[in-house]
Length: 220
Ligand SMILES: C[S@@+](CC[C@H](N)C(=O)[O-])C[C@H]1O[C@@H](n2cnc3c(N)ncnc32)[C@H](O)[C@@H]1O
Image 1 (spheres, rainbow, N blue to C red):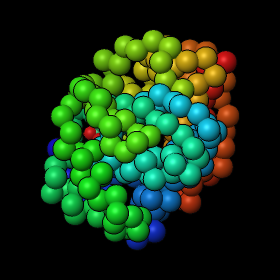
Image 2: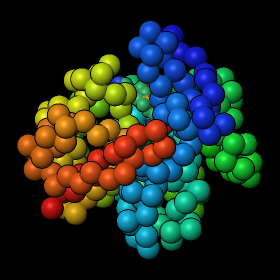
Image 3: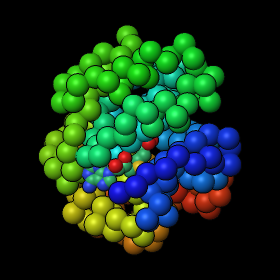
Image 4: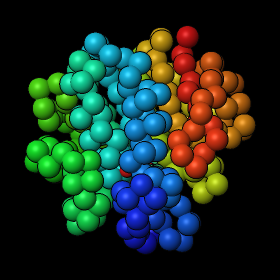
């Protein structure tokens, strides 16, 4: 599928799948959305802890990068697992320019290492951040009682409805520890109901700029 890099409203870039008119992040602001959904309403709940974090859709690595930047501020040790079937290229990573955008040129080497480390093995990126990238389909996630936090960042249900079903949320539920939290930018009623059907308690929270709501699901 053809990918092109576009500018979003907060000045940060993202990738667009032209045929689907679908973006890796919100057109209203890629960095703003990522911070709002995954850091403010997800990572911040785990301050002072050692956590296992699963990202559904490693993509550009933006969520991993902002997690790496925020973890020391929150005194967090993060074991980060990013699942991705269609990795982006080094050229795309360079063109997105996230380290410049986030004013973290000092983390450029670490960010590059995130993209260059081999798949399927854990690699320490900084003292408190270990990354394992897994190249596989989301439907192949088979972990049990492992993750404290899930960043659920698949393409929208409009273009990939098969990724917003009870089948996938049941896999997420099984993969999470009790008390685990899943956050996503999505807010559709059908998504919320699929989460509830597999056992999650679901909250509707204010969405990032340009979106009224987002969802946070808890495994009680
Ligand atoms: C919305 S984008 C993710 C954005 C990413 N979190 C980031 O910060 O760049 C969705 C990602 O899921 C990947 N993807 C789509 N379908 C998939 C599938 N069935 N299994 C694994 N990865 C998939 C895409 O290649 C894309 O990188």
